[in-house]
Amino acid sequence: MESDEQKNLFKWAAGNRGKHPELELMFHIPNGGKRDAVTGANLKAQGVKAGVPDICLPVPRGAFHGLYIEMKYGKNKLTADQKWWLVALSQQGYATAVCYTWESAKTVILSYLGGG
Image (cartoon, rainbow, N blue to C red; front, side):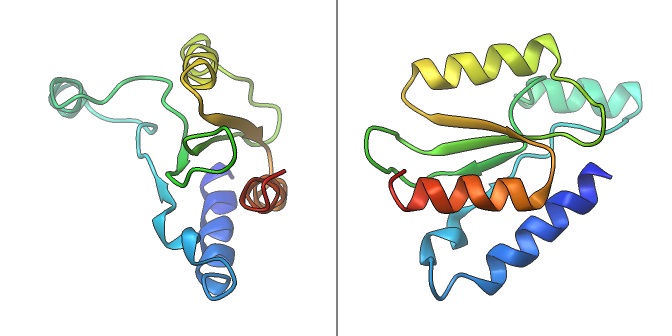
């Protein structure tokens, strides 16, 4: 499941903050999941927007202001909203990636932190 991949990624990050203190700043953006209509309307009124990537690492590197990662699992595909956000964030100077496993997200993060 996608949630398991994210849990594993954050478990890895927690264990590697000594080597990469920037990982302390990484966080999950809880936009997904099934909600009842009242909760959904309340969250929308508070600014929740469909398609925002799952993970943010607000650490500048090279030409980038930070890194956003959209996690997917199995045969899941990007939605139109997710594609829009990834393009828009890239245009604003953020690195973006789509990852299907926590290991691939880890590789993206390490490359990003190393300046790659």
